[in-house]
Image (cartoon, rainbow, N blue to C red):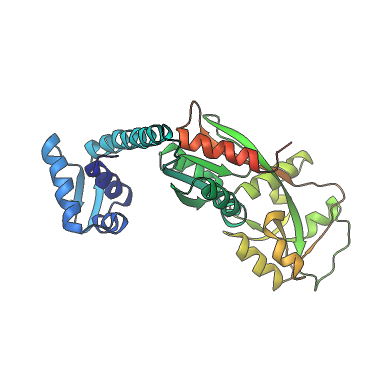
Amino acid sequence: MDDFRLKVFIAAARNLSFTKAAEELFISQPAISKHIAFLESTYGVRLFDRRGSSLSLTLAGQILLDKATRIQSSYDELDYTMHLLTHAHMGKLRIGASTTIAQYVIARIIARFNELYPQVEVSLVSGNSRFIESALDDRLIDLGMVEGVHHASHLQYRPFMDDALCVVASPRHSYPTPVTEKTFLSLPLVLRERGSGTLEVIENELSHHHLTLSDCQVRLYLGSTEAIKLYLRNSQAVGIISRAALENELTLGQLTVLPLSSLSFKRSFSLVMPRGPLPPLAESFAAFTMDNCQPSV
């Protein structure tokens, strides 16, 4: 159950494009324009500023987007609650996952969840941890899954899985092991970008040893773990990568782990959500994740 005109407006407002909204909702662009015109006529306001082919929200459009998003969430919660009366889990669940979790962890969780609840429609967006927290603030997702150590105070976090970051390199090149703190500072590093949970963990561990990234020999920052792994396989550089992302490369002998003597890069993957009660379907997924993943310590 929902108000289709509000759904059309939300799609147009988030995409700032009638064409993309039409593609998302599988209707024609004239139909999008008709529904938007109806809303503008009903409320006597312009919802979009149109400059050539570009769109931007007016103040009225921004207000309607906030209210419409809340209304749509209430419709989703109503659907879920009413279907529970017949013991059916139904509805739409929007999840956001930081890059490492999205690529290497969450698919197994969603697959098992959908086996139990095949009538739940799950959608997934990914980005670095800061992007996921921002999407949660903007109500683009119902809950998120992030890595890292620095958390936003206005959100709540539930650790659901432990992870270790491994120092890795191509086996074609040798380094003295175990890697001491002094040796680590001399290694040519390839790291994830600013805003990633992986980089936060590295910076946090370095700070415990009164060090910063400026003390290290950082060769470059890359925006994905896959890019780092490919770079390492073709260079003498060293990377710091989640153990969850290394299964294939370690099995095939494409990368090798360098043991550490004093540094230790560990973290937890966490569910992140607004403070207060969650929508019932999001709470069900959160509980399922906590029950079916390795608990954090």
